[in-house]
Amino acid sequence: MPIYRSSTTINGKNMAGARALWRATGVQDKDFGKPIIAVVNSFTEFVPGHIHLRELGRLVSQQIVNFGGIAKEFNTIAIDDGIAMGHAGMLYSLPSRELIADSIEYMINAHCVDSMVCISNCDKITPGMLLAALRLNIPAVFVSGGPMESGKIISNKKIIKIDLVDAIAHGANPNTSSETLSDIEHSACPTCGSCSGMFTANSMNCLTEAIGLSLPGNGTVLATHTDRKKLFLKAGKVIVKNTKDYYIDNNLALLPRSIVTKTTLKNAMILDIAMGGSTNTVLHLLAMAHESKVNFTMSDIDYLSRIVPHLCKLSPSTSKYHMEDLHRAGGVIGILSELNKINLLDTSVFGILGFTLKEIINKYDILDVQNKHAFHFYSSGPKGKKTIIPFSQSFRWSTLDLDRKTGCIRSQKYAYNQDGGLAILTGNLAKYGSIIKTAAIDKKNMVFMGPAKVYESQEDAVYAILHKKINFGDVIVIRYEGPCGGPGMQEMLYPTAYLKSMKLDKKCALITDGRFSGGTSGISIGHISPEAASRGLIALIYNGDIISIDILKRSIILNVPKKELLNRQLKEESRGKKAYTPKNRLRNISDSLKIYSMFATSADTGAVRKI
Image 1: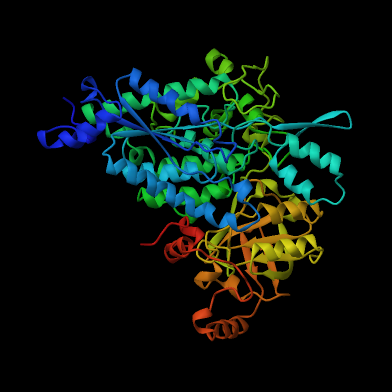
Image 2 (image 1 turned 120 degrees about the vertical axis):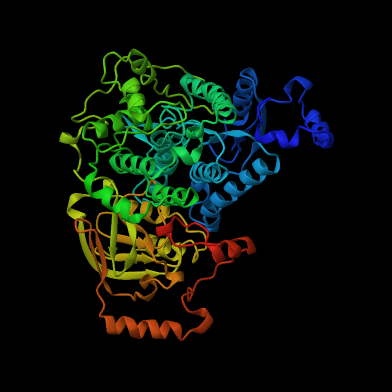
């Protein structure tokens, strides 16, 4: 009989009590000896990306049973960053990543589970599950709930595609009528699934494909399409096979830490840079490196950002393309294929299917006319019907987007830029680095200089933007919003969206030791490290200080003499225990967030906990 991890809770005379309890959950005599496989489901009615997952756990569970395993489902929490945005609720978002990872570790180790299928979708949930998988290092398969269809409104007799960011931006636009705003609000998020642009959720679900922990199409097949069901069914089959291959045949290559290496993290980052993904992915990839004990750092990301071309633009960088359009152009594999043609990827790596990345690309590349299966797979598209029911439509395009010159995915020759959609900036203001999504910046704004307007909370900055206290040319500084200083590192879509609605997004810059939503655009620089609460220079900025940003040179400089900075440092330290804390901020911090802040590190290390 195979020696599974779960055998310790089943075998032996002294395990009669445990077996009695397993029987009470439905395990029968014939089942003892089979692997116990957890179905880790993040279903919740709070989040559109997860509202449809209730029955999908049972779908996977039945497949596990069909192929010879014992399936046991449990749930994790899931916070909707969009609903938590703009108020104190956002303080809990990033810390929830660690809570999710911990809760999975507790459940898996307490019950000696053999392997798991992770059903995730949004913002911190996929990263939290990834950290847990690496920590536990048991066979794991990831399958997301899929992206929602883009919203659509009719304006000037034309169909306009919209998403969540449009709703936020127009909500603060004084020129948007109530009627138009209502139309946008009702149409921006039309179906279940993760929001339809290349925001954090979709970025991370795409990266799991590149890493090799999920199936092709995981990041781009729509939540509403019948093809998404096939991914769930296959996930159930694959996890049973991989569990048996590991425990019976000692196939170590199927373990998460064997799959997540420096090479695959680099592949994932190369994809993210090429598609202009969310800057939050940097946090999560660095945290994954920490969890898997891989030497992958901001320096590696900086190097890659200089050599990887920007091949794909999706919302929020453009209103033309959304996730459904990326899928029609060949999805993640389509981008990886273009990157492979210019020898940027290591395609010798293996994933959960047991194939190399090269084999996966060859099998799913829609530009290869032999791949009729791939053509059919990537022809799935949106129905355009509002629904929260998964797999409820089967629309297919009659043609695919094969245009690598002006289409959704471009070849290197026709790239938007020869260096990619993300950049790492360093300088005296960000000694350990900061990050900007260059995919969403006008070329004329690649160099920017202006006076600082300093705010010690996101709320104060939002008030200033909406009450016309920001002028053309200002550099808005939001500090004490890092992992420790927030605590919790708030995501700041509202300030950037409001800058857009006030027509300031191309005229001002915003820098912060906090972070941004994947929906952010404009000169928005986040992850300033060290953060203010960790004695970073951002804590010593005064109103009117000149800040120089040069994205081409990858620099961010506070133009204040060293002697003056030393005087400011001494003045700050004279505050004693209150040094490097916000001066005029009223914010209630719960005990759980205080505990998080005690251990949280700055963004350059992935905001992991230092224990």
